[in-house]
Length: 311
View 1 (cartoon, rainbow, N blue to C red):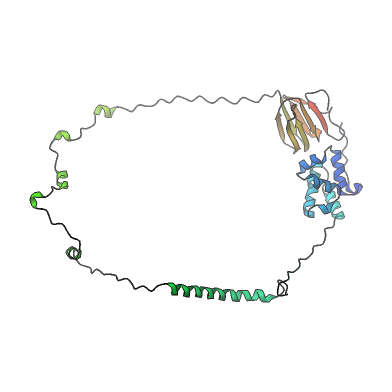
View 2: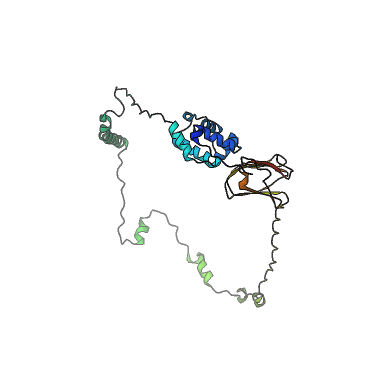
């Protein structure tokens, strides 16, 4: 039998921190488990529960912290935020002080510095460029222009040959001249048998061998995971869940959203803790498990599967 849920009211508890703490205790969660579900640090949650808001960040972040806790603990979030805004007043922002310059003035107080910069900056750049150009011109030696010899169009090869000072070898006598290689290459072959014989017709007509491709056997299908030791948790509502196997290995730990399904496999028996047991369906070895005997008045459940009775 599930006890009727009573939503803590910040007006009754006096503060949003007390409301968060009462809802956490009602859900059977430790502050470490709530920190894991909300992704907040333990120190942040302790400051929230003790209403030490001056130790937290800006109000925009703290409001988000309260929304996270409200969703995990399944309580309204707007009353928490309204109570926080009533209790906490952020300190006034101090305007930044002006920096004192060596000249005695304040940085940014006199417009003379900023108004003169656009005038003097281009002038300084022009002076620097002019000095660099003058130094470079003074260090560069003066060289005479290179004389380019123009060749008149229409000159023949003989004129160029005469003006070329290269010494030419005298021509060989006619009887000792080396026969031209191009003439020998152009002469027809004297032996008809030297011509390449055509390829063997029988060899040319032979069809190429066709490689035989043997069919590849399909890979064996992966064997299905045995369901004898499988533990399946289906979440119809958001809930905290922690599952360990017989060896103490943690198979699942955290806040699971509604609609998710967790399939676990380890060494039975399994130790389970559910923060919202009525919203979780448990199946072991393909058989559904009745959780009514394990559910406490605050909707939590601690039990082992397979085992007789709750832990």
